Image 1 (tube, rainbow, N blue to C red):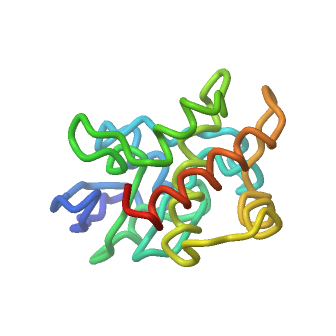
Image 2: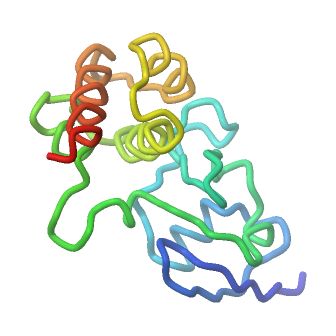
Length: 159
């Protein structure tokens, strides 16, 4: 099988890679670009651990082919913080103890950021609906929802 050359942007930086036509974006991110924050929890798009955005649209990277990244803008958990400064969502997850093992956390953070970009003042119901595709086996979702609400408030107020 011949490799395909792909040129894209990942977290704002130009990126090029060679991949097999059937290789998933998740595998490309992890194995070819060294971005291991996105995790493979299920491989069927049911758990959300591999959530990234492509041109601003939230997707399960295990269901997208690497070749589909051609000319697109990909955002992963690695692009969330600005240098040493954590994104408000990341800080609030720590403050609210909204994570335990951390396996699902990158996908939940990417999904929550995507929500807040579309709706800066989501209701609790909106947050729960938006994050319904992200499964966590370690903790309840209340702390996660509270962390997202707190981050949304901080971001709206420009603290």
